[in-house]
Length: 141
Image (cartoon, rainbow, N blue to C red):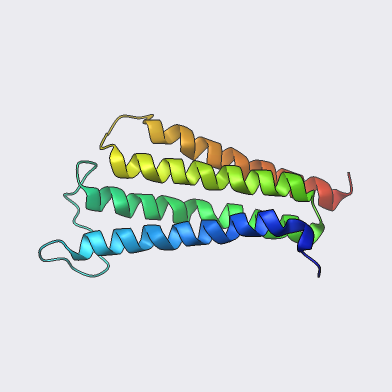
């Protein structure tokens, strides 16, 4: 298969993976630095006032959102969806997840919706739009 038309989309996908690895590393290092840290277990008494909690939730939230985006991205590549729109939706997702991450690391709030909720929603809509684009392309419209 030839993917040269998807160069920008592929870079976006690579950066999404890199961002996720960075989130994992930040969550792991911040947790491991805690006194009496137990591998694989987050202290249940932690909440948004704890950076360890926020770093963990940032990573886990990305892990919850990644399957839909990445599978939709691969589907878009395989069915030959518009390279331009595929790239746009992937990059919107990446920017939304970066905004979500930055706000989650920075703002300790229990408020709902919090400012990060808007970035979450933007990423969700980008993933949904990419899935719809892929399905429309697959259907031959």
